[in-house]
Length: 281
Ligand SMILES: CCCC/C=C\CC(=O)SCCNC(=O)CCNC(=O)[C@H](O)C(C)(C)COP(=O)(O)OP(=O)(O)OC[C@H]1O[C@@H](n2cnc3c(N)ncnc32)[C@H](O)[C@@H]1OP(=O)(O)O
Figure 1: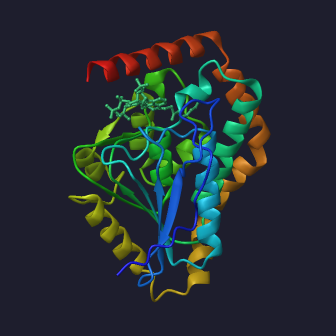
Figure 2: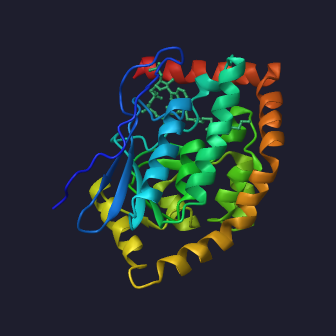
Figure 3: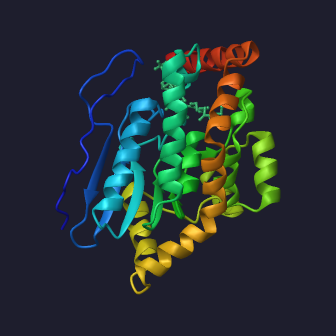
């Protein structure tokens, strides 16, 4: 029996970057029986990671860290999309101040999720390109529903994944597979992702994916929580420290890159393609 405690009701949804409405973008529900928190992204239509969703994700992760949950499961309220990755509208013809806040928030959210002290798992119940894959690979375990795709497709958009995106990817895949997939901007089907080790298990539904994530988190039931979390943090310390040390340079590098006319042009063409495809459907 699940007592649904909505711990994080967050405001400021913005499907248009200038507009804010009082919609919650993430919810956290803690299961009374298992003590495990399910963090659900809820920014239709595709859980595009804009500034507000990233802020909400970060505060939800902080909440889970603070409420003594036994683990965190990240999932989506959509039936077909886990997350479409970064909201391209944040990067295309960007507002100067907002894009700084956006990238800084992305860094903070990644540091919180990748460095989380609680066991983390992703129930990937839909497509998970780019930033969506970053969130999934920041977790310790991934269960994915069939007929979707996952991967870091940045090169397909003419952009370059930063080092810390690569670090998350490399924490899951061997260097050779990771390098090839990133260079190709490859999107893996669920089956391909399982074969290569990008995901750990498949499940036939979101519910089953969550059950499998719960079972993974349950494997730590008899492990000392402090020893477990310190061990995890030691494994991840170098990646986390590298971004901490280079946060300002990473931001400036991103701003320089994204403002290049050729990059702006590429993003514009990519967006146009997405919109045309959406209209045809
Ligand atoms: C130096 C920079 C480093 C940056 C590092 C990371 C970069 C990223 O994360 S960039 C984002 C990369 N993401 C993608 O390439 C995914 C693009 N989207 C898709 O492939 C599909 O939308 C998806 C498979 C996720 C879902 O397909 P559908 O269910 O068929 O939906 P639609 O394609 O019809 O999309 C609906 C609606 O959403 C808009 N959309 C989709 N993705 C994005 C996005 N990432 N950012 C902004 N907007 C997005 C799409 O244009 C449609 O809009 P409307 O036409 O207005 O309805």
